[in-house]
Image (cartoon, rainbow, N blue to C red; front, side):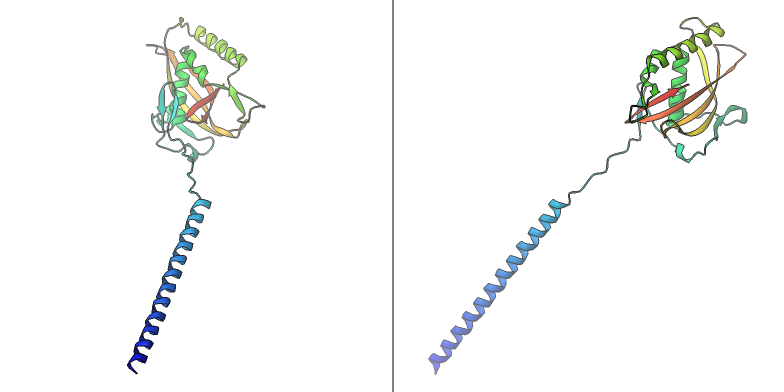
Length: 215
């Protein structure tokens, strides 16, 4: 009788051991399967980083940023107008800061401006390309005529002040860039009579650089 009890006890222990072993094995298999699934999910769906949108743009060896968004301005709005005491304030719109430097450089015969000017193009996907020789020569001819009328000698400084800036919306030729009508006050240094001149300038973001069409 005692021998029979021992025998039954051994059988019971053996069954318990086998059950525990199977349970552990199944648990390991499930864990391995779960890890494999997670690895496959991670490898199939890599995290894609969104390209960074530039907030600072380069031209004339300096950086231009904005504290206000030009896209919030309605077409035909006078952003600045000296005649209504809305004076140009640097740092608000990078496009206008760039225009201010561009016009001063152009009117004072700085040839570096042509590195930042474009001509419209029907063959370029952007709708524009670096300024053509014919457009460059026209700008130089117009500048020579203007400076001659003001009796400015070669290299003599012209004082330039943004008097009125009117936003004209997106450039109709490219459906990109922002167009502005500019009235500038120009004069010789120390002059008491200050005439106006007018320009249309379109500013483009080209990568992290600013470019413009000047007319």
